[in-house]
Amino acid sequence: MCADDSSSAVAARFTGRAVTAERPLSGALTEVDLDDGRTVMVKLVDGPGAARAEAAGLRWLTDAGTVRVSAVHGVDGSRLVSDRVTQGPSSARAAVRFGRDLAGLHAAGAPAFGAAPPGGPEEAYIGLAPMRNAPGDDWPRWYAAHRVLPYLRRAFDAGTVRTGEAADVERVCERLPELAGPAEPPARLHGDLWSGNVLWGADGHVHLIDPAAHGGHRETDLAMLRLFGCPQLDRILAGYEETAPLADGWAGRVGVHQLFPLLVHAVLFGRGYAEQAVAAARTTLRQAG
Image 1 (cartoon, rainbow, N blue to C red):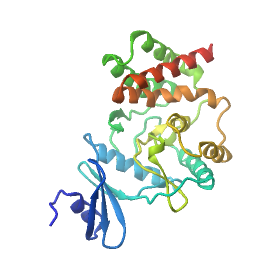
Image 2: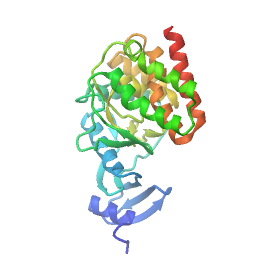
Image 3: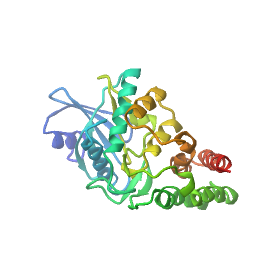
């Protein structure tokens, strides 16, 4: 008999099905087989409110009706129960479809930059790093205040980013109004769109997991896909631009949008990512003249 707080018990409670097997995959993930043939994932999410934030983000992305998103069955404290995605190989067809669907997700919009998903907390997370969802109506000002400078300060205080380096990132923030490109409405972002959260399903579709969803600039999601590499990226971008062409000069703004995830990684994982963030800032300043 499973303890009341076991992964099997949590899965049974939220799905209403009996459990036939349980397989721990890591300290945070457990696969649970149900008596109707389905398999669900039980994820242990660190941080107060982190599981609720992730569940709210998954539901918000699902509500857009475009991208495939792992369905949420329930949240119990720090545990999240969702469908398992059966994975297959990447394909050109799935990539183009995903690009179109991602454009549709972004077009579903958000009430403001920094808006949290409905039911999601203001104090959320991106991976293991705290992320504050404070709304704003001016993207350059909001992005600097809530997505770049908080992580720059933490990295600087830890000695991961040095004084002269921090000054270059700050200069990018000061010049964001001229560097940001044409104004765009708030997009509905996945928010942590690296390749590990992009699953190529055996059903021929791309499925998204583990969001840090919020209202933001659509180029930020695309910049994160490029930063950490993603199979079939050129085809994803082609499908995206078929549906919602990007503003002129978007490729030259990739470094601006990569500052956020790079500084988050500098806070979590150290100096190597700090060096990449500083390089992105300096390249941006050099190109801007």
